[in-house]
Image 1 (cartoon, rainbow, N blue to C red):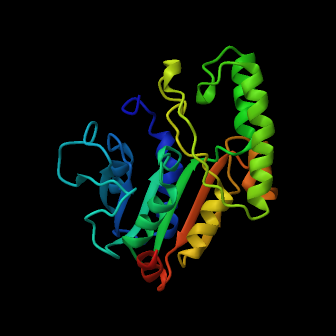
Image 2 (tube, one colour; image 1 turned 45 degrees about the vertical axis):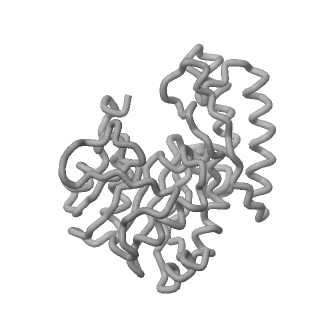
Image 3 (cartoon, one colour; image 1 turned 60 degrees about the vertical axis):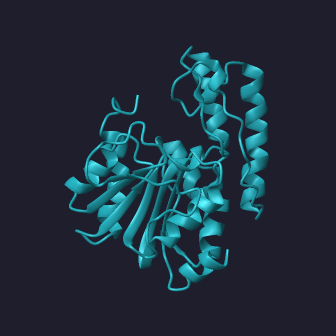
Length: 250
């Protein structure tokens, strides 16, 4: 599935690096899987290192290495101009630690780039309802209408609570038993943009780009007006000079 993804999937992610990271900078692509996003970053002019927690699909070539960002890695402090993760955060069982490790390996003034589904958005449940109505493979592996409607109500509460300041970092039980491959059925964290932003700020980062994006006009408008309700989690944060000490204290 990863190998067959269209390169367009990675285009917006790479564009964040092009916009904010100086060309030629040394960057780390966290959770790169089969390495497609890392190669595109290299083609864009960056010195990109690809990492993944498992060697299973990681390319066996120079510039790719095993590193689990849910624990302290062997990567040196402040060794990259940027650290990015595309569609990884929702699959992380320790999201706070994951974010802290990304901040730790970035030099002061460098960037943390995150792009993922915002799984606590009501739009996620609406997508599932549309999948069921159109008889498509249901997102998150939810096959029953009542489960999708329950999720809609839950996500309205989750997004509202997050917008008001609650940081839940709530775990999710995967739905691998459905037999569905992909569609984020293996997600283990109810990814939430508002709590991720606050955690990065507590680590001394300045958020320079937050939400405002989506696959449709309606979702883009919603993400601008009510950021924590948007269907996509898109955050670019600049690491401050106090960030490394904040991470080490944690």
